[in-house]
Length: 573
Image 1 (cartoon, rainbow, N blue to C red):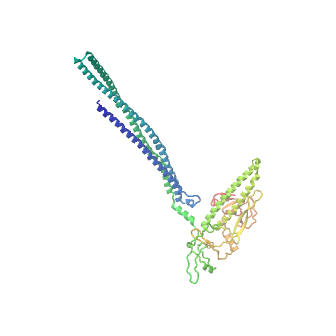
Image 2 (cartoon, one colour):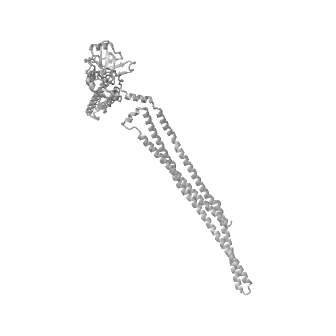
Image 3 (cartoon, rainbow, N blue to C red):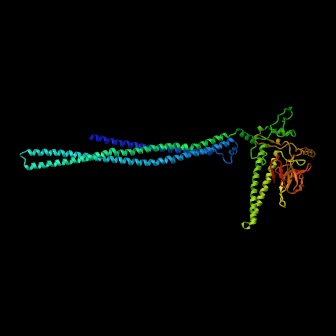
């Protein structure tokens, strides 16, 4: 192999190492670039999930606000379900961010460091091999030049010896000296030749190992490293897609939930809710009649009309303040009176019923506390070492007072509710309302309600006593009409006889009752009677002994059996 060829081979190898070094560095830069891309994608997913969660939280209904009342509409409930599903949807994007960070970003960051270290080792081995072959080449060149120099010196020494030997004027000693010098030079040339041959053989062997073993091995390692880098990058890209694919089923369920929520919207039921919420219960105003001028305008009104006309009893007052049609009446602002009399009948009935339900819940809670304390007191009585029974008496007394107050309040609201529903019982010349006062009785008998009769005057112009509006508010105005006179008692008796109440069940008296109050009937223990009217919440049940004897008895004194065609169940109080 000539020097020129050797230079070309070595130069080519060195160039390849430079090219490979540049390419592998670019590969590492590409991995870091892809890692940065995944990191930014993860941050985008996390920020997106955060924004989605904030959006869902922003539109969630606030507590104790009007938005909670809107949940009775199916469209609002569907929107709430959509917000909840959207919150779960945001959670899936948070999961994507977490998986990208754990499965790609962290793994690629660790692999990049390993890749840099491996690349450094391979190129260090390559440079070391190159340095070794360069040094071997330099040694070969040095021995070669020395052999060439020694050969030239031997040739010159031989020529000098031959010249001296041919010269007759030169002494024999000089000739011998020239001969010895020539032999020495030839020996040096021979040694240089042997040394050069040895170096040449060594270099050829090392060169062969370098180009056919050392360098190919290093290149193969670099190639394997590069292939692993590419494969690892491909796996990361596959993981990048799989991370999104794994959340698709849950995202699909979230979207299905949104679709189901949208399909659950019922327009007719929502509109019915609006009608029920704002239904006033008033009848439409009657037509305005034409009258000759000189006489005041008047309107035909019904018992439940929205008109504010007061009739003709006091025309002077009507002239001062004529009746208004409800679309033009201003809304009465404020919380309104306790009996909700500022509301239309239907809305007032709903408010009163809701108030009664709340009071009954409070009564039940107090009764539960009373029962629990009573049981605890019994335990203390049987086991004095566990506690003093008298220590519970103050609390029991407080609970009893609370129950009495709540029951009285419930009776008050039930009275207003009865007024709205028009079911006040008529017991004498004027309508009467019974309130119940509970008192203790001996022998473990139930508490008997004591009837307190209050006369209530009812007129048919209650709907005309207020100026009403469809939004549920109206203002009261003092009535200009005198109270209606009570009906004739004889007429009431005839009416009651004609309107005999049907039997709705039977009852059995559990305790004797004297029935001394007006409208009540005395019963004996164990007596069977017919039930003609259920307890309306005032503690009394209307019964009949025969066709002529009927009246009220305390509900707690009888065991009632209702017919199947009325209620379908047995009541025991």
